[in-house]
Length: 128
Image (cartoon, rainbow, N blue to C red):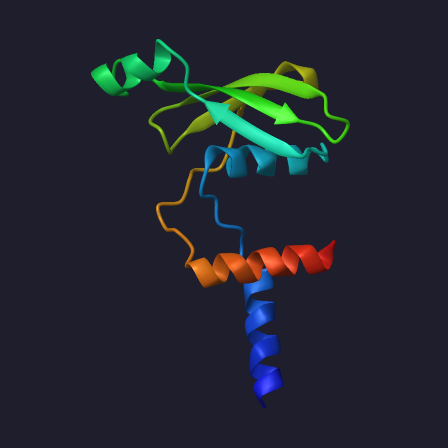
């Protein structure tokens, strides 16, 4: 009975939709849809975009950031990100992959519980 409960719980976690908790997660969805292998995705706001966004707000300056995608061979593809605010209605551009202002999923306001994140990571490792 215990094994069945554990198996059912693991299956429910494995089948539930992925929680988007960062811009990198959202960009990864687009890359995976296009079957573009990647090792790491980093986004960073640079001056003056960061100062303008936080000083004047999204009604004056959209949220924007640079995007850096590390590929399996160590090469880096650069791009940009622009959002209506810092979590919604974002678009990514990465010229190397032919991605031009493609919409990405909104970032979830809900954060997974630490043990759920650990189980999700464990499932991903087992699937590899």
